[in-house]
Amino acid sequence: MITAWRTREELAHQVTLLAKQGETRRAIARALGVSRNTVRALLNAHAAGREDVAQIAVAARPSRAPRPSKLDAWKPRVAALIAKYADITAQRVFEILRVEGFTGGYSGVKQHLRAVRPPPKPTPSLTTPDYAPGEMSESDWSPYEIRFTTGKTAIVQALSYVLVVSKRKYFGLYESNDLHALMDGHDRAFARLDGCAHECKYDSQKPVVLRWEGQQPIYNPRFLAFSSHYEFRPLAVRRGHPNDKPRTERSFWEVERSFLNGREFRDLDDMRAQLAHWLDHIVDHRRLYKRTALERFAEERSHLVTLPRHPYDTARVVYRVCGIDGFVAWAGNHYAVPYDHVTDLLPVRITQHELFVYAADLRCVARHELAPRGTGLRLDPARLHPPAQRKSPIDLDQLGVAFTNMGEHAAEFFGLMSLGPPRIWSAQARQILLLRERYATDELDRALGHAASYGALEHAAVERILAARATPRTLDEYVAETTAQRLEATLGHARTAPRDLTEYDRLPLTAATRPITQEASPWPSEATNPSPNPEPPDPATMTSSPLVSDDTSTSSA
Image 1: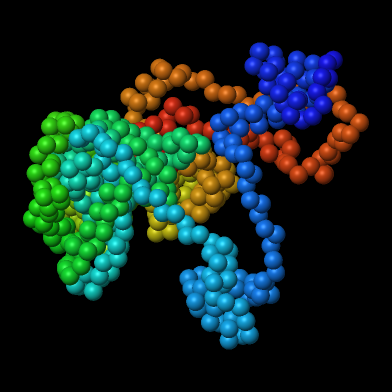
Image 2: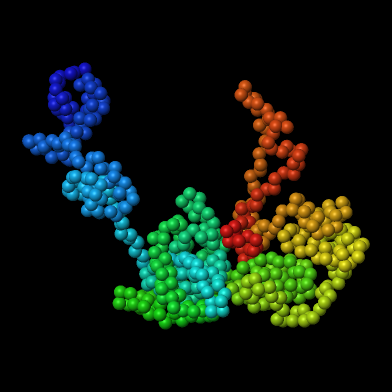
């Protein structure tokens, strides 16, 4: 070990020379008898002196030691004034202090406020990326409470679709902002623009994004099928970041100031008619940068994605049991169905304006104009039922046929039930048949057999048995058969089997382990709960399909 240095300057000189010769810090530390931290500090100081710190012969003037000030005793009072009045000026603070006995000057108060007042929060200018023509669009919803001239008040959901480059817009009005309204609004926007952008930004609304896995959005399968049909890509942005899609956010300001302001509407249809006129005669002809939206759109039109020959079917499809009176219920109204389909589980397709009822072989058996939600109407425009009919549309023999078709246990149950007066059991039989809307037929048949064994022949008893023993219908039962077969061929039937927990009982116990007795166990044992937990639904069935139950809304599609 060589220690041929006496001062700090000699040590710094030798460290610098050895480092210049290519020696490592460890070797320099051993040669000079110092630590590696000292070597690193000297080398960093040398590098800073050559690059960052200016070398001057005259040392800088030392700062003066702080002196007591007349304001020192008043600083808590100044802090209290700033906390109470964030925008108070130094002149106003000086005036208040002088009234309370301060004998100092204004300059000291002003300098102190400049030092202690929190600086204003910077507001950086927000820049948006530049997109090529036809590359990007934005879409969002905004609710408005509208009072119509009839005196009725309703919440109207406004949908906005804006092309980023040309700024040409489309607006749609709907009673709800669910998945089907979103797809219908896009259909109409694409038809108006004769194309669509290659990408579209959305917030984390459930019709588009089911949930987030970290930074990855999990998109709604039905909306992905819709976007695949039109060949555009949805791009989800986080909630609470409106600057990620500023054009569609700004478009609602235009709706509020130019469309809703100074207008009256008779109903939603009249509001939609006035909106279409406003889009065609005002919005498209507003000038921005000395050009109208139509003039800018003429340059972007050729870059849009070409529309398919047939539009996407945005209708909602649900399953409903045809009631014993020959009607199916939807949104607070009842729609007539031919009597041949009484007690059958029928697919019902609902568009924005019409309702279609299909038989089991997907043959359309009834078509109705959609009535306003919750009006309680019984619609029979095609006279499928006689106008005045007091008795039940089907006789009691048909009830027996319906029970017999469900299974052996159901036929036995009906045989026991029909022993009493018809006026008592006929209503119970009708209520039991309507349970097919929520439960599978085979589960209802088993529940009827269990009820018959105990003589429980009432609708309430059967419903309690189903609630305890059966599983309500899920989306699995409404997936199209072709989709299920395709996924089965791809993924197979492999499922992760639950692990046998008894293998843990065979592990050796440590000294700290204390077995839990049956009385102290917080969980039910196998003897008290013999039925195992049902297996989770197969992910292969959780895919987009034109047959989606109303019970599985857009948030669980």
